[in-house]
Length: 139
Image (tube, rainbow, N blue to C red; front, side):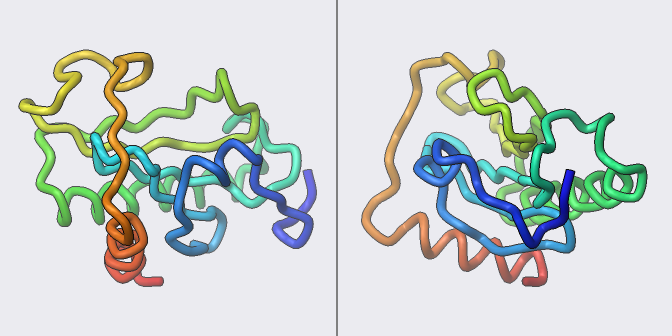
């Protein structure tokens, strides 16, 4: 793996998200699916696929940034539960989902993936939320 200098975001992640900003290790992204408040953290390491294959220092930093994102999502959305997952079945580039769930959301208590619930943000709404989350993340 190489450093953030050579980092390129996977095209599917680029298409499905709005940039929030860059943390020390990860690019923070907001999912364009408005069904749930949903951040995605992508370590800016070329070739990163699995957390356990990151350098130890990057593993520690990733966990710190997951915590930072979780705290921001908790403060912004007061979820009943945060779902944090690094799945990557569709996109091989390592990325971690941080999803704020409410008991009344469309897929509760099941997983959001494959639930069939997808809703677009109104014009400009995703960008405004991304700016708000950037502030909440200290970016």
